[in-house]
Amino acid sequence: YGSWTRGVAYSPAGNILATTGSDKALTLWDAITGSRLAVLRGHDAPVWSVAWSPDGTMLATGSGFYASGSGDTSVRIWGF
Image 1 (cartoon, rainbow, N blue to C red):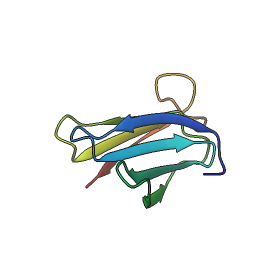
Image 2: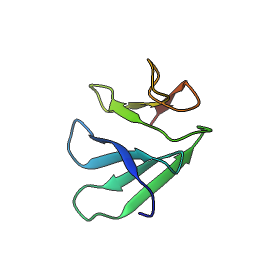
Image 3: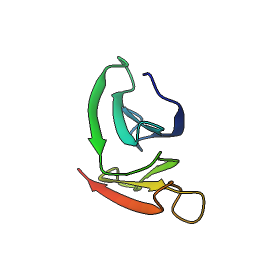
Image 4: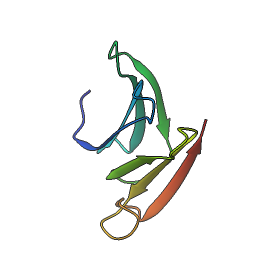
């Protein structure tokens, strides 16, 4: 992976693993095969947290140490 992993969350169905880290990206992995599905960029600092919506259609990522969870103090919502 090449980066410090800081946030990890399985999708509600358990088939996708979302990770965040010091690479400033959200990475999606196939939880069965371990293959990388996508790398999504949008933060300007390491991303500290990630959470799925209950229905698995959205992810929230945060960058900063306070409410947002990311160094750039932003929260991003990713829709699928």
